[in-house]
Image 1 (cartoon, rainbow, N blue to C red):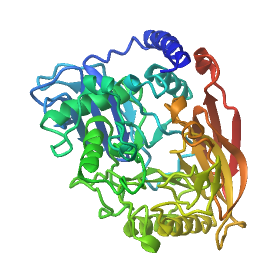
Image 2 (image 1 turned 120 degrees about the vertical axis):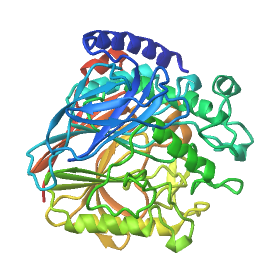
Image 3 (image 1 turned 135 degrees about the vertical axis):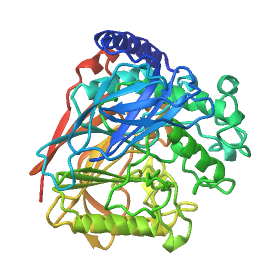
Length: 515
């Protein structure tokens, strides 16, 4: 860890202690962490406890109650599902053990408006890349990340969208170089996965908790107990970076990667609740209708956010290749054509508008001498990925009654651009706005300029109006939605003292009127 980052982390701990003192009136009891998500008629909560319970705890919401579903072997991790609730209602939730004894103080959580309701405002917090284990020394210290999250939450968002890379624990990314991804000093503490063994119910479970738990639990704690969260997965959440060489092609995920992504999601953050307009057959849908990879944030007739993981279902079929399945693409197009909301936002895990020269991008551009080039072929890149990109942007640009906006993460930067053309597709009459919402946890080694010697740039074949060139800063974006416009406020922090986090103000504000 860099000395400055260590000092920043120490100062952040002091700041958090002050914040914790202010919040001391709420007693978290046995909670290690708690993350809720909601729809207009259902609540889903994922939590972990400091000690295991032999019998399922119970979640109470007025007269309703739900017994926990154990998601680990010991009984420290539980999921609670409360269906049949009323829209736009503030519930007081209570968590007890099987005998009715409180495990923590009660707290409020509200359901969303019904799909046919007409709310007048909503505030959404967007960020990406919040993961990273302090043991590795490669990420912003968790205490500093938590301080950034506290500042973001101080603006009272109604919803939180975390776009991918909640976990960094890559297993094989440096196999081509013949070196281990994780230092031995780290694996001596956490242990090493046995890829041929199940993730839960054996030795791998303890490794998973030691690897993933410190990236999630101390960052979130119970800070978001009253703020519904939507957690999308990306490449690192499958315990691998998107890379392709003659020795290793990391995606689509192999059985271990898929099991690791599912296990970490089950233990630490909620998946996506069902939505009446989202088909059940899109892939990774559980028997209870909950989806692991494709989600919908529907807030009455004001907002619909379409969230889709571009990694789990990647294919390598040349011109027919895709990042998302055909059925998922059809769902996205249908929602863009038929949705009756004022604002429809696409939130893919892989952003349009920029390239860092990586393999698993929409674009064929390759990094060379700190610039992008298409003069050399990008090994194992698939032309079908760009074709799917063009189809999705064309569907967005065709929405005549609303402004097309994509809000993504992945590239460890903050940025904003308007895409006017992609290849033969002309969007100039209805440009597509693309936003990089900002990374919460990226440390100095993780920024593209350190890894590849360049910040993200505009790829070949795109014509854009770049309103904000990518900034390699930690930060987040707050989006305010009203029926007539979207207001984006961008926040950044990297080079200032850690105490400056507590008074961060937006460095840029963009207003996007509804078309």
